[in-house]
Image (tube, rainbow, N blue to C red; front, side):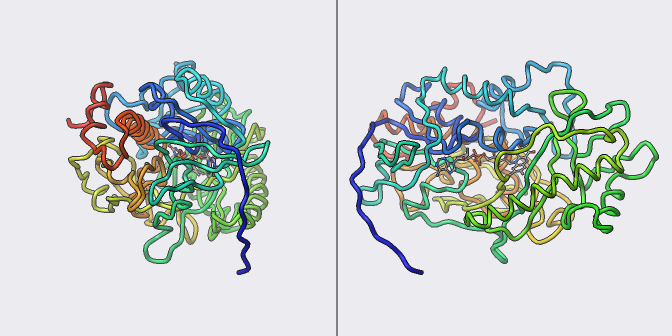
Amino acid sequence: MESYSYRREIPVSGEYDVIVAGGGPAGLAAAVSAAREGASTLLVERHGVLGGNLTVGHVCPLLGSVSQGTMFDEISELLTHDHPGRPVMVTRNGRELPVDPEEAKIKLTRLVASSGAGVMLCTVVSDVVMEGNRVTGLVLTGPGGMFAVRGRVIVDATGDGQVAYLAGAEYYFGRESDGRVQPVTIEFVVSNVDESRAITAWGGSDPVRLPSGREYRELCREKQAAGELPENVSIVRLHSTCRPGERAVNTTQLNGINTLDPLELGRAEAGLREQVLQCLEFLRKYVPGYERCELKSSAYVLGVRETRRIKGDYTITDADVEQGKRHPDVVVHNAWFLIDIHNPSGAGQAEGYSQPAKPYDIPYGVMLPEGIEGLLTAGRCISGTHRAHASYRVMAICIAMGEAAGAAAALSARCNTTPRALGAAAVQELLVSRGIDLFS
Ligand SMILES: Cc1cc2nc3c(=O)[nH]c(=O)nc-3n(C[C@H](O)[C@H](O)[C@H](O)COP(=O)(O)OP(=O)(O)OC[C@H]3O[C@@H](n4cnc5c(N)ncnc54)[C@H](O)[C@@H]3O)c2cc1C
């Protein structure tokens, strides 16, 4: 491939104790966590709003659980307390906490602002500044052009592990057997649903029945076979939202998309927008209570479940998640969600149904990219196998990881050391002092 090499003088606009790249569930929790420790903190986000998949991705409900006392308790309370009457479904997925992306935009923005962290929006991390193997700053591109910021510690919460990748970190990508990743999806919300007749449906193993007595999943399969649903959509998931008469629809699906290739993202976007219309038509035509449903809103960006998983000092394994492994350097305790692999090469789940997991620890080592200093990862880009990632990628766990990474970053900056040299014990002490259960 042809390549260019170029030099450019760019201004350095500031210096911070902690810079967090990516303002999704993990990144915003990291920024709040660091700022609350008194670290001068900058949060950099490429979109014009915070929240990542939670807002721009329209992902609903909040899934997963962690031990008591983490920022997940605070954020889930913040996002649900204006809707006290809404039923919280408990399914094989555990508790399904409905959240509203519109409300989340304002509430999460206030949360970050109140912590004192600075926020740069519409600003993309384009490169890293390195001294040896240590990341000491980021090259950013905002509406006004390119500039740099210096940081004593950087947290990579970009989902794609973009900072770590630019710093030269090794990473895993896709299934160990064939490198395929989970499919991409555009989520959407429908309104005008008749609650007196309308079902909810949380997944392919949900035996929910229509008022006629017929299993809903059977109807979905029949219509998929008849070409009335997209090729790989064998279940149209219908989650309750914060409001009666609405459902969050997590169902469109395209496989085989290289989610690091922007041209493929463009192709996927075009295909999935068509799928939204097809699924809407299916609901109106065949599902009781949805005859008059309308498209209320949809994700602004393609929902990307899986890209780089940055190789760390430790890698969470399949067995760790299946057996509930404890670690002496735990920073998130009792993380739990099913091993939920949306099939990378076809319809439904990769393993029939989501597979069981036992509450496990997220150890500090998974946030330390191997061979790189001054950098922590948090959220879905930490170090884990494809199957482990299919469990820890849910938002409850990502928020708790973000909090831990932010605490570690602030402490490292305060002690004038690197996150690796700081070690887990200091991070644990701080998290426990916040009331977080790490060792029960
Ligand atoms: C379709 C879909 C359905 C899902 N369903 C559920 C569900 O029902 N419940 C649940 O709990 N979880 C669900 N998940 C998983 C969950 O939403 C994500 O795994 C989680 O949001 C990951 O959080 P994160 O902060 O690591 O990454 P993200 O939410 O991806 O946030 C990363 C942020 O970094 C920003 N960023 C990336 N690169 C750069 C850059 N170079 N410069 C600046 N900013 C950058 C992005 O814009 C984004 O805001 C779903 C995910 C998808 C895609």
